[in-house]
Image (cartoon, rainbow, N blue to C red; front, side):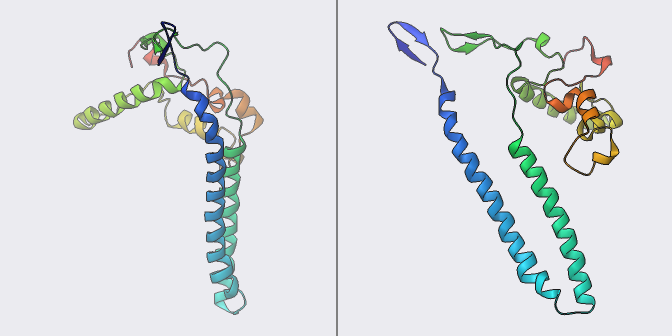
Length: 198
């Protein structure tokens, strides 16, 4: 924070984040170089030449190469799905209580924990959950968490309902429409936690 003409103004540290785009490009090149070195070592140096020897060695090399290429395709598909997915923007109805003069934010109220997982409320919930886990293991009971919907619904929140898409990094159009958690903004909560404090 700096003072200008007697008025305290908040310092915008996010203007320096634009340089992080270059770091992101370097990370993509680093991942691709690791994949390239791995491909060279597995395919070109080890199992590629083993295809030419004949016999059982050829069959084993062919099986390893087929599995390797399948896993490589899944890895690259998943990685580039993450890299090229638009991170989105701040929802229009979200606001941060921010005091321009002091540069401070207002403390979080318990009413703000309404089922939305914003970045500012993940850490307190994680700390609280860790504390709860320690107590739960001492009592030999299962910890209760507001976002725990049960095994089946938790699995559907991550993988979707269409079984054809479970083993590939994609979702069906119906799942994207029916499961709001896949959009990354709203998460369903347990109905029996209504009115209880996190």
